[in-house]
Amino acid sequence: MFLEAHLKEIISSIILLIILLIIRQIVIVLVKKIGRKSGINEARIHLIQRYSTVSIFLIGLLFLSIILGAKPEDLALVFSSVFAVIGIALFAIWSILSNITSGVIMFFSFPYKVGDKISIHDKDFPIEAIIEDIGAFQLHLRLDNGNLVTYPNNLILQKAVTLIQKDAIDDGHDAL
Image (cartoon, rainbow, N blue to C red):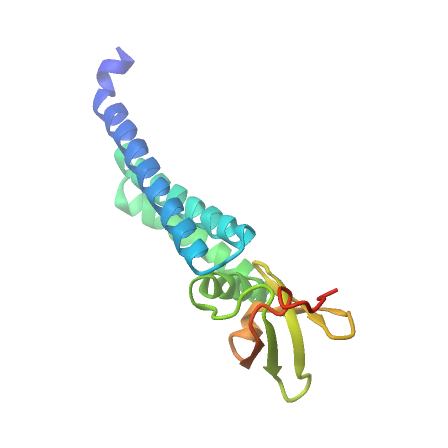
């Protein structure tokens, strides 16, 4: 009885799930190809893949709620309330969101890779170091004296950066 009454919603939900899984797989493969072609390390590739999966999941929840009969007015009320709370919370931690967004931007367009020696032109604290890791929130930079500096992703996109030596680690320079 239940199955017959809700057959259309069940079939539509299964079709949506299949479509979302296919889209997710395509996005995962594309991110991996772009990452490997650009010489990006596996950890960053997996991070962007997780961000993509979460985004696809949230879009799927939206479509599933429509399939199951939620009215657009109700969805608008729920989303406006949720986004208001999230907006207030993110205002308090805007730098974290800024660093995550910068990390995603850097995945696709940052011209420097792990192992490159760079110079960051900052008038207060100029840095010349080798990139050891590019994370979701910051870069790990190894100075010539061996000290490790973490540099926020949002700042690296705001400063002028010069490439001093491509893949300095492989050229016999010990980054540690």
